[in-house]
Image 1 (cartoon, rainbow, N blue to C red):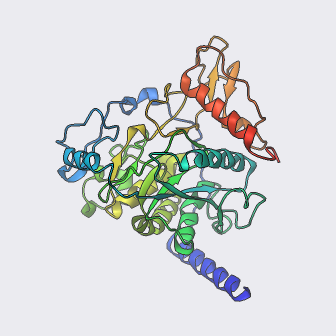
Image 2 (tube, one colour; image 1 turned 180 degrees about the vertical axis):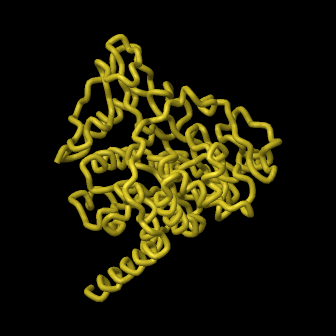
Image 3 (cartoon, rainbow, N blue to C red; image 1 turned 120 degrees about the vertical axis):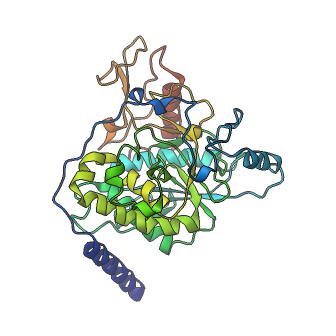
Length: 385
């Protein structure tokens, strides 16, 4: 056991030294904490699509009955015809987390709903791992399957804790025994609302397109990390690392690049200022493109209340935005409402059980979110401790 610990410590030390050698750490830079408003983006339209590179999908008609954006017609028919006979392509769900109260209560709720839907018809959900990048175990190891990863060396994240995510994935992919051939990268503030099939196809990952990831707009910056010889800047998909379903072997290649590109972007003051809190998302999109791993852009992968008002065909609720309403059910975004649900209200404390439901008139997406949080907290043992 002592030799194993010594070897792991040596690996971490050498890896950290290599990162430090390749990427000099800059001084702390302020992060933009403002959340984007999707009402200002054309990409917020549910019918929008983005052309695929190399002509694969740019001239392909979107199949209206298929929620997967940009699936070529012949691939759609093949997938449909073989759907009843195909062998399940299981994916492993991985969620990175710190040991903070904030991340912990979200992970417990997320895992509760994962277990509810894992074995239901239509699911290709396999195992689950919380990748805990605190470097030490916590009291929830027995409740949630957990891999303990080492954080970046002190000071290397420059106050941007999200930089620990790619480094944690590198360690997990190298050291864990992952049975499935695919990985779903998810986040603590995701609630699964129905069984998730494997949405990836034919070497393409499956990813949610974010309206605020705009490679074309930032071409001059991204060319520092995505050279001209890799092709047009549109080869970079408008995605983050989550939610993404991708082949395990592909992710094993992407993850070290994702780590180094994240650190390099953080080091560059111009890029750091431009990307702010979504810097690591851009880094994953660039790294995926550098390894020629492209993605089916799946608009209905998840919804984000309060902007998305209906559950529709979504598989995930992402509650990253605060939901503020007056007592008449009118959204008061940017102003604390008479009724509100905002995860940041519980950044250092547990949400209580039985949160009050929204007033009449509040959209179904928000009502469903609060009901699902309440069901989970009512049934998770020792909630709040």
